[in-house]
Length: 136
Image 1: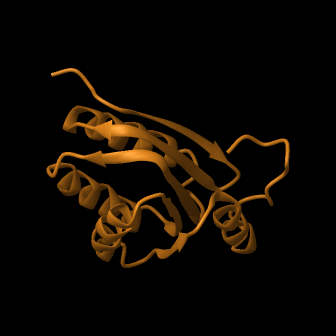
Image 2: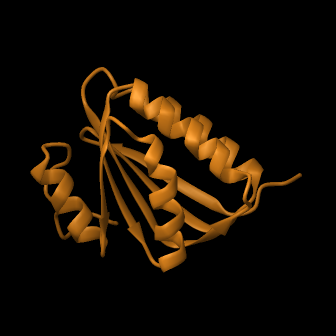
């Protein structure tokens, strides 16, 4: 089956930034998890963080959550210490709260917007403070 939905990822300082877009099927989730691990591996020799931007994400098929649980477990074992999540829908937040129960070694904060998420990660020493010329 072809992928549905998309994502963008980049590493900035000690933070992996993930922007989720549209609705996802399992194929998109599997590719995202694979690419996430590849990028995180470039910074996981030191404590690192993830910023998950869900402001343009709709939802995904239910089988996604098993893959996300595996990814969260991988983060626990690979030095992830912080995760900032920005949701646009209450349902997203509810589902993400449940999935973050697996993140036992990671401090998670659900933020109202991207500037709050950037500031929290900057305060944690994981990301330079947000500059107005940066795209988010």
